[in-house]
Length: 238
Image (cartoon, rainbow, N blue to C red; front, side, top):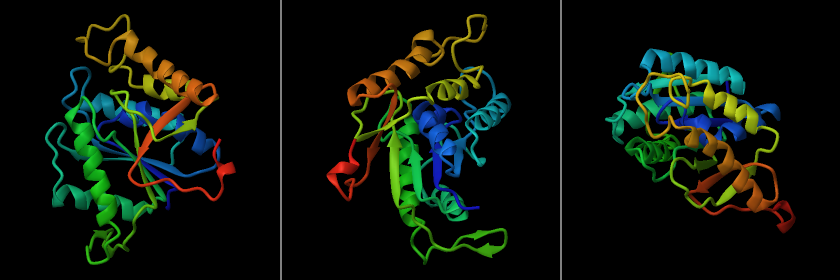
């Protein structure tokens, strides 16, 4: 199965927080979207890896994605090396996405920046025919996504472009809150974390609202790019 978009995150919930609205919109527009999680988030203070597995499945069903996989890299300790790159290359070649969405280039959590560079490097290497990978006992063809975009996470990085997600912010919030152990829950007995506060949950919406305000729509999500964007005409820009 070929995908139009493959969204990759270091942890389950990274994708939902960073680009859940964009995914929901593209799915509604008939695009085939998949999610790849690099780790199970097993070092997370709240919940457990097993619970996160279930929450990730629930969230994927809410967004309506075609597939969700987890590479089970070591949370906190995965590195950008040949072994990890090859595992991601296999997934890229398996689904042949036109666009890859991945972690912020710089962020509070060390896995986000690491994951960003790891995925970006794997996307390039995936296009080299002399790198051989096997999947289901078959030699895979080289494949390089046309675009790699980085979503915004904890830090308020200035986006290079934004996607209008008006009408899809509620779906984004529902997908985020499917991670019931991770985010604000008034009755929870779990330890407090930087993302478990009501302020953080609220920020998912007010960031989208503020980015929307800046471009004249209700809600938006921001992305950074690795190379210049190009349009056929000035009138393609909103």
